[in-house]
Every structure is written in structure tokens, then in C-alpha cells.
Length: 307
Ligand SMILES: [Zn+2]
Image (cartoon, rainbow, N blue to C red; front, side):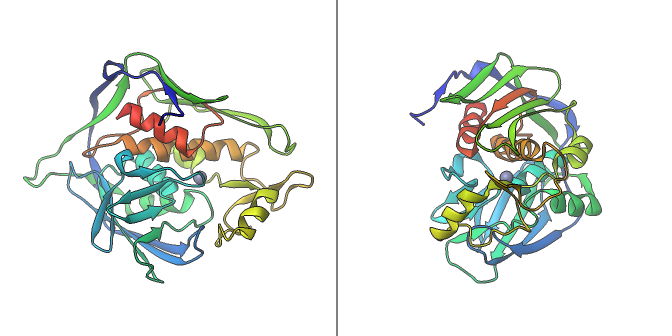
């Protein structure tokens, strides 16, 4: 983390009660689909779990906690790795679980092409919309611990402003009694995207479901070409991302929101900061977050600071 500058102190954060109880899913939900990087088919089943267990992946019977302690640097997605077992592209699924209040769950994941040691969450349509849909269809219940008791849900509250930054990118957070998010991106060389800012209303599960969840991954056509040539993003297609060309604009309109790219960055931010969660707590800080041109690496640096 030497590349990042950070203001850091544990007194910046207090883990306090949200006044709510920890939850889990009312039953198992499942989805399968193609993965972005390998292009293989992968199946995910999300099972209810006891309070205090938090969220974790179960891959070939190896358990990989959805914690920033196991997050690995990767520029295109967020990857979790433990004991050589790697789960890639976790951010959209975790974003939906965090925003909808699925505090505890076991995420069983398997590649139907059985590639040893490496698996990836299906990209679906490039958004978290499908995950939110199956979570809402199943519904939630109060999670109990192994003695049958419900547990208080904690969240990180900020006592003072904090930030991480690199060059002109940053994630900053300011004390606030409610979660608020303001996010900016700037692509001066791509007129169809340009400079966008998105500011949320006080954040909750229904705001997320309506305004954020269906915002899709975006990419630049010229970069996609290069990545394809390098053997990357084998599963990438016009079905799982909105693709923008520098000269021709959006190649697969219509957009779901005029500022869909910026909203997707909010979706990613929530998924990445959910990795601060432990033992069924909220990971996303109760704060006003202001972020600009941040990516997965900077988000992870901020999640480490919270934790
Ligand atoms: Zn994303």
C-alpha cells in the first residue's frame, strides 16, 4: 500500500449499533451464467447462515471470507484469495448483499468447467439487478446465532473525516448520521461519457434497488479491443457491459440512466467497501462518502482503513 497516502487512526471510527438486527436470506437463492474474464459458466447458490458468521464464499469446500483481509490487487475487478483459492469479480454480488442487508450468508460457487483453484462470479448483465431480484423474491429473515439468539447489527461510524488518494483520484468520507454518496468520474477524451457526478439521497435498500442496482459495467471500445487481443475478458460482450467508443459514442444504447457509468461506480464502491464487514456487521461506513475517479484498488485501500 506504499503507493497510497492515507490519514489513519482507529479513533476515526467507532463500531456502533445500527439499531437493527442482523439478517440472512429466508432460503437459498441461485443464479448461474457466463463469467467475464474466463468466459466459463459458473453457478452460485447463496445459503442462509447464522448471525455472526458474516458473508463468505465456499469454493470446493474452502471458505473464503468476503473480507478486505483477503482482497487482492487486480485492476479490472475485485478478487478474494485464500490459501491459493481465488474468487474473482465479487463486487456486484457483494454490493447487492450489502445494500439489501443480507449480513450473513454462505455463497457456494462452482465453475461448471471445474478449473482448479480459480473461480469467478457470473457477470450476468454487468449490473447487480439480477442479484437484487432473486434476493427480493426470496426475502430476508432475522438471523440467529447457534444458541438461537438474534444479534445487534453494528456499523462503522466516522468520528472525523478520512480519505485515501492517488494522483487526482480519491475516496473521502465525512461524519454524517446517514449514508450519503457523491461520486464523480471524468473522461475528457470520451465525449459520450465526459464528466459526471451522481449524488444519492439518504441511502437504503430501496434507493439502491431503484437507482443503483441496474447500472451496468461500462468500458471503452478501444480498451476492450486491446484486452481481447491480450486474451483477457473472454466472456465480455455487448450483453454484459455498455460499450463506448471514443469517436462513435455508445455502441449498444439505450442507457438505463443518462449517468449510468457514474451510478455503476457507486455500485462497485458499495461492493468494495462491504469488505470492511466482520461477523455480520455492515461494512459500508455511516458517513457521507465523496469519491472521484476511484477504482477497485483505491476502494480496497479505503476498506482497509475502515477495518
Ligand atoms: Zn463493476
